[in-house]
Each structure stands twice: as C-alpha cells, then as structure tokens.
Length: 331
Image 1 (spheres, one colour):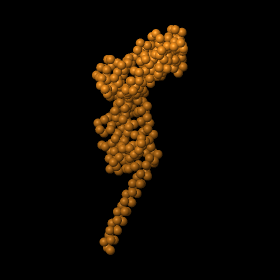
Image 2 (cartoon, rainbow, N blue to C red; image 1 turned 60 degrees about the vertical axis):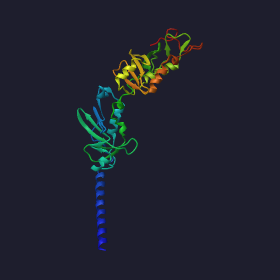
Image 3 (cartoon, rainbow, N blue to C red; image 1 turned 90 degrees about the vertical axis):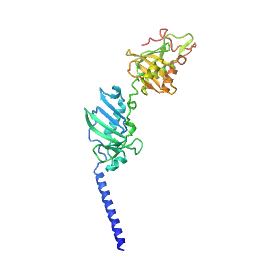
Image 4 (tube, one colour; image 1 turned 30 degrees about the vertical axis):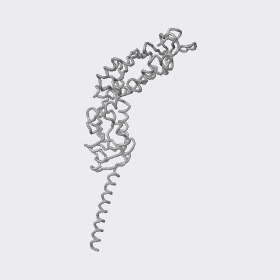
C-alpha cells in the first residue's frame, strides 16, 4: 500500500509540474496582442534588402531613383512591383498568436539564427532596420517567422518563394514592354509596316509600303506581330555571353522597331546551337543580352515571316492600301 501511495504521489507531482509549465507558457503567449504588428519599426523609405537562404545563395536589392536594382548585375532593374509587394507584406503583417516561444522550437520551425529557409535584412541608409527569419511552411503561401532578437515564432502569409535568392527571379521582366500605340513602324523581312498616329490611346490600323506583286498586307497578322513586340517579356539574363554572341551573329530574326518619340531599336533573335539551347535576344539600346522562352522566340519568327504577314491580293483588298497610294499618311 505504501508503495502504491508513493507512486501516486510522484504522478501527482509530475501533473502539477506540467500544469505549471503550461500555465507559464500560456501566460507568456497571452501577453502578446494578436493584432500587434510583426515589426515595430517603420519600413518606409527602405533602400536595401538582403536575402539569404543559408546555403550560400543570396541576393541584394538596392533602391535608387525610384527603382529597385540588382547590384550583382551592375544595377540592372529589378521588379519594383515584386520588391514593393514584399516590403508591403512585411510592413502589414500581424503577430497573431505565437506557435512557439522556446529556443528549441527555432530549429524545428527553421527560424534559428544558423538554420533557416530565408534570412531577410531590411536596411535604410546603411543601417539594419529589421532582420527576420522565414522557416518552414504551415500552409499555402505561409511561413513561420521569427524576428531577430525575439523569442516568439509566428505564422505569416508569405511564402519563401516570394523572397527568392537568385537575380533571375528578381528581374524586371517587363523591361522591354511598351504601349502598343507608341510603336510607329516595324521593318522586318523587307517590309516596312507603319501605324498612323490616331492621337488616341488605342492602336491604329497597320499599313505597308512597297508590296510584292499580287500580295496584300494581312492587317490582323501585322497587328499580332506588333502586339507580340509591345508585350515582349524577357526570361533571364544570358548566362553564357560567348554562346549568345555566336548565336546572334546569325540571327533567325532581325527587325527594327520605331517609336513615336523617334527611337529606333534593332531586335535580334537566335537559338543556341545545341538542341536544348535557349533562345537569345539582343536589343540595340540595352547593354545586356537576354534569354526568352522557346515559345516566344518561335512565335515571333513565325509572326514576322512574309508568309504570315502577306496574303494573296484580291479585288476586295481596299481596306489597307500601301502607304502613298491613297492610304493615310503614316506617322
């Protein structure tokens, strides 16, 4: 009987200790207001973001002249939308209820100082404003997070994929896009396509200069080509500059695009020599050579071909006349 009493006493003591520990933990957690901001510091006017994945992959973004830039690429434009969205998400994030507060939990959720999925250092004028550790994901577009120097671990709506660590993932892929009504002419494959300036935001019908006998311009095809060029997006910076130069020395497509503000830009497209080689793009007003997707390269080559842009002339082809032959004057 005495032995049984001792065992029950030990079990009761263990239960009391567990209850005390749980009460202390609940008390610590309860001290945090669920709607308190994750970061107490203002993130206004940040001018640098450093992101590291703990595996020797890192990227730095710097903000200058209203543009986020990539110092590793000599200041090449980064996506303002992407960088500003990251800052906005962090600035508006709330703490919520901590999922853990112990030091041991940091490694479990991968938000420790030496074991993390992402470390984000937010800076202003050469000074660290805040450092955060993003960890494993509890759900779609979510990560566990811990602010450097603090114990609580929270859950925020931010996926690690939204804080990539390669320069290619931060490029401003819309760098070459321009409004369609800014395009005044396209010279390609011996044809000069022109678009009259209507003075409106929408695009005007396309016209053509000299035509081969028996041919007329397919206005829809010309509009399609112009649309492809105005919406052209880059995929990456060409990593192999030598291969890119070699390929572009014999381009599969070369054209000149003129804008309303009198810029003439030469576009050259070429595919690398290997079967699985990427497509390359150079633009005369850009220092770097780009990669584009195979589908974009192949589509542009097809859309710019005379067999696509021209059709057999018929007696009803009066809507689009050659420039200088009764058509409107091209701008």
